[in-house]
Amino acid sequence: ETIDGPVKLRIQGGTQPGTTVRLRGKGVPHPRGGGRGDHYVRINVVIPRHLSRSQKELLREFEETGS
Image (cartoon, rainbow, N blue to C red; front, side):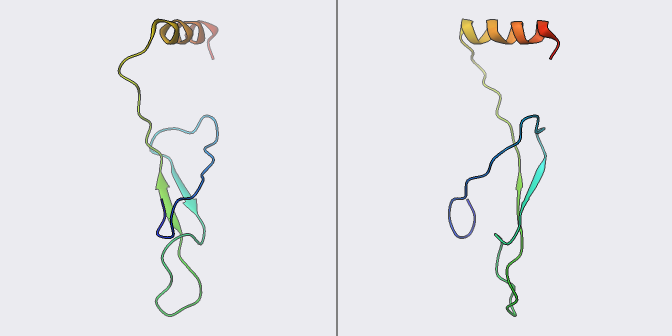
């Protein structure tokens, strides 16, 4: 959500928690004109507390592949 409303943001694979992404020109307008500032987004990852059996098994398989 920016000051002008929702914006779609594509997150690259492998992005780590705490990463900051800059949205050029999506911030507040400069007080004396001349464009807009940038809007910064910090990536926070929410890890689920409860997983189904199949989800747990997929995570185990992923771990075993060494990826």
